[in-house]
Image (cartoon, rainbow, N blue to C red; front, side):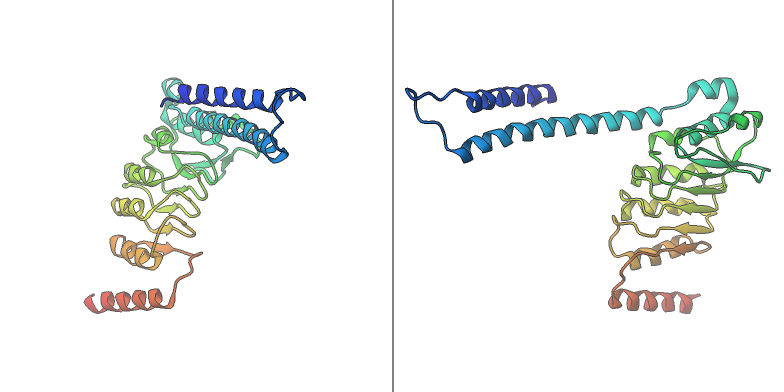
Length: 256
């Protein structure tokens, strides 16, 4: 059943319940329903109202996220890919640093930022911090032209998922540091896509609730990225997992 038909069906249900709840009960008619029945009817009506309100709220939130992660074609066309990427980062309340500059450009908690970054046309981004922003797979297209990115932080981003990680291969020639800690939608399958980032030197995968057997995942990542220092805190590793990790590490040392 489509969403519109479901909404119509629920509206009819609520109308019927409301009529029953408000029906005048005279002495000549049948006896009114007991109090608990009328209370259930009242609560049922309120439940459907709240359900529809939450549905609308969820749809509105998704639309806002989609709009924020839209392709900044206008900025690309008139200011170039570097300024467009910088503008996208600031609009999502992130921060960045241009190549050759020590100062960072950041948006404040209200989303306000300094427009001086427009003075650095044709200067690529070297470090980007999108922590706790709503960046998603679609929005990555705004950073696609950045071939000098060395550091990326997506710490605590609720929209970062396995598809997102798979698309990070576009930075495989420059990326050295990556922080994807505290991202609730990342799973074990998504971490496997990081094997393409051969130049990675630091990786933070702390507190990822979507992965199972974190001890074994750490071992596999170390094998895929032997030159990378992996940080993985926030996991309750059992004794058996720790023993397996030690055995596998000893085997690797013996083979080398």
